Amino acid sequence: MAATSARALKLLSIFGIGATLTAAELAARLGTSVRTVRRDIDTLRDLGYEIDAVRGAGGGYRLGRATRLAPVVFDEDQAVAVAVALQTVPAILSGIRENSARALATLRQAMPARSRIHAEAFTVSAARNYWEFPAAPIDAEIIRVIGAAINRRHLVRVDCTGEDGPATLTLEPHDLVVWAARWYLVAFEPEADRWRAMRIDRLEPRMPTGRTFERRDVPHGDPAAFVMNTHDRGDTPAEWPCRGSALVALPAPVVARFAPGGSTVAHETDSSCRLTLGAWSWAGLAGLLLTFDADVADVEPAELRQALRSLRTRIDEGLGDAG
Image (tube, rainbow, N blue to C red; front, top):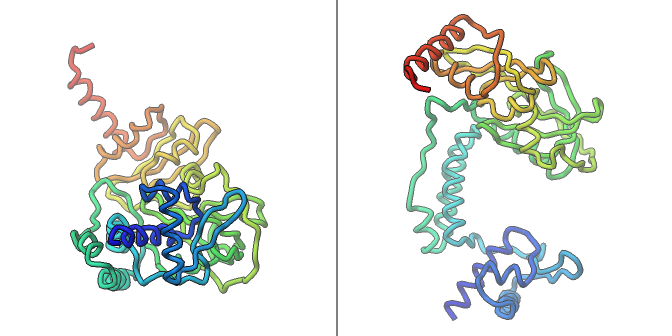
């Protein structure tokens, strides 16, 4: 009976993700037989949980829409995931530290003793090192508003600040992406007939439009890949003690994907772009520039040029007469 109860709780937590899974998929996750899965589904139904059987291609079992799960049904791995997420989210969202702490405390109280042990086993503190280039945490309310528009497929009107000055745009919001500790909105701009990757901290949502749109296929087939390969995504150079730029003999999308956070990439030609970036020292900045393993030209300012010369001298001296 104890094994059946534990397995039923595990099954309930799997259904809690909202997916439709076949009996074979459920059996594989539980490490049991299809017959046992079907018996456990009957057990849950007897307890009052609505488990729907979905027929046809892509069919299987799912939790009914009218079903309310128990307050918390977590296995050990889920307990750890929740504890980590709630303790680290203040690093990327502002105005949420107190709420995340209260949410974690509430969840811990509601967890069964075994799960609570795993959730309380550690405390996570988020700290940055000298080679990180994070942006300031985003206002959680902006994420809530834009996230709701994405979920409902509602057009959004936003005031944005870009290189060309302030503007008001109507967008089809598709996805939110966090990359290099920065929040981006992947959206389609109907009036310009183009896709945009836009920094969330450059946007100010207006009143909800309530107007719906049909979802489109995101370029590259993946919103994260689209953001990483887009050079004009609204980034601005981070404020670092040393900042410089150079013309790099690589296409802008290639440099945009591998440039550190806090840098900017400007298209020059199909095979070159201008990279602007910063670091704690001129030598560190020169080192970052060399990681692209490409020819550079028009290096600015003079301090960065001198740092590159110094690195060349040190490397020559270090190699000596070798090879």
